[in-house]
Amino acid sequence: MRVLGIDTSCDETSIALVERRRILAHIVHGQHALHERFRGVVPEIAARAHVERLLPALERVLASGAPEAVAVTNRPGLIGPLLVGLSAAKAFAFVKGLPLVAVHHLEAHAAAAYLLDPPPEPPFLALIASGGHTLLYDVEERGSYRRVGQTLDDAAGECFDKVAALLGLPHPGGPAIERAGVGGDPAAFALPRPLLDDKGDDFSFSGLKTAVLYLLRRQTPPLADVAASAQEAIADVLTHKAVRAARRLGRTRLVLGGGVAANTRVRELAAERARAAGIDLFVPPRPLCTDNAAMIAVRGAELLEAGVRDTLAIDADPYSE
Ligand code: KG4
Ligand code: ZN
Image (cartoon, rainbow, N blue to C red; front, top):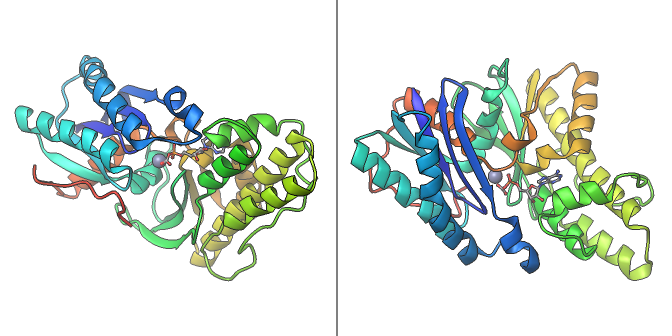
């Protein structure tokens, strides 16, 4: 089935056309330049930018083929931005008489791995680390995303963003920290690894940001060393806990997703630790880790194949679990 995917949940305007795991067309319009000076995403600016950009992007994507169904992110995300994509998706599905399916953004981050060749076969464990969420999904069978752990406070991406702000680096902080940390000593500062040895599968990152704040109050350390040390602490906790949970659950496959999975050190350490544990690792290329609509189309196709259809009355759910 040829599925049109739409994602406007945050600050990327994205539309894709995907047919059986093949991307026919894909547009991702970032808005970083619009939000940079505010050191974070301003919801109203994001929503207005989506309004301007969505239909021109749709027009271009439609040049690659006619969709047979429409998949759109309706949860979780920023309410204004979500409503722009959802309204456009409904109108398009209504006018063309196509089936409509609403997609959970974080489940779609996990489903992005299905675009790999070969794709991961369930059962597998998925670590999703983005700007607003950090969680583990146990995917026992196709289409079932059971949450086994999540952050108790800040998300991993949020931690990157907040540490970057403390260091005077631009938003989004993840790529900025990655660049600033090149050549830095990842062991220069012993930053905390919250919940690393805790038996549960939950995460916590707010203490790491606070530790960096106190470090900067005491001294003016080399930027590259602080960036590399913070990145190492985040990568350490994420990959250690994901691999440990996979082993405990008897999963021999691990999937990474979300913007933080675009981080080189996270990818390296995950590969190292998965290999040592005899686990096969599946990591999408970077543009499919950060927000994109191809993953929405893939998760949408999965739902459609399972017979799920949503009505034109479906609403957005910004705080959805
Ligand atoms: O999945 P995503 O694109 O959007 C959300 O659903 O939130 O994730 C965005 C988050 C931001 O916090 C950003 O700083 C982080 O992913 N990120 C990275 C990298 N690229 C994006 N973090 C670390 N290293 C990167 N290269
Ligand atoms: Zn995302």
